[in-house]
Length: 130
Image 1 (cartoon, one colour):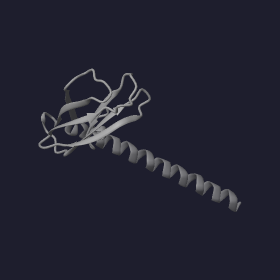
Image 2: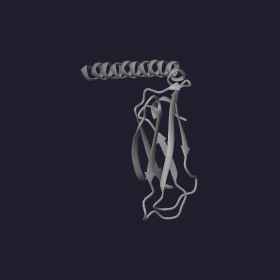
Image 3: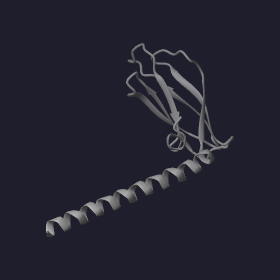
Image 4: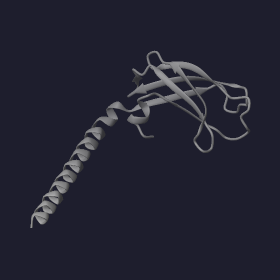
């Protein structure tokens, strides 16, 4: 009889905890969805060239905006990724009033292939999933 009561209490406690977890997740996601348009950060990158060779430098001008205004972000991260999404080169550059310039050196030993250049701030991956 004692085991049965304990099992019922544990099951009730588990359901209450699960219910609290679901409610908190719904509240958090709704709160985040309400703020997302307000905080949507966009990163614009202008490149020196679109076709480059190993050993070249990719020069870029970067603009970061929130609703058309300069973002308060102060650092932009630049990554060159291979087909599997692995970074082959990474760098950072400073931003002033949402703008900055920088370059990424393409490694000399990099094979001929298509690579993805990804530029972001610390906030941009969390603010806008696209």
